[in-house]
Image (tube, rainbow, N blue to C red; front, side, top):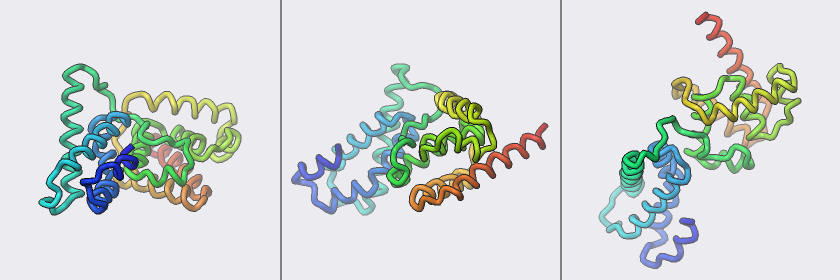
Length: 219
């Protein structure tokens, strides 16, 4: 959408167009955090691009900071307007900012959208549900292989994946620390880029063990 329009606007220099493209994914992430909707976030980014064309860009010292601030304001305006019309759901962010069923190497390049999707998995799913969902949706593991990795029966693995899909449409269940989020993100990206799925499997299995330990201590 934006890529096609870049060359169509003669008054925007290659440098100014590149400045926008470099931060486009970041702008999407900002808008998505505010709105919780991928389609609305896309609309806000497109609006930001149009406004960038009309801006006196020669007076701007930090294009990235300027665009981030403008996008945040646009998203807040959209959100406030929609809430006034009772169109914004009260629930937390959904995991639709990135399609985990896409080629993982491409998914890993989607930056902030991927961060948001994995954050939703951490917030809404148990460790077992999260592991099953990632292996199935992102890396196309058969249910039998998921069962082997997680120590489940094949039938149970199927049930866990189905349950995970349903819970992603629900409310956030817990808050997630930055270190936990970064750890899962780094492991996922490494697996997507290098094909080192064994490390991903170990990380997901370790998360399940750790979650079980916390539950026993809390009991």
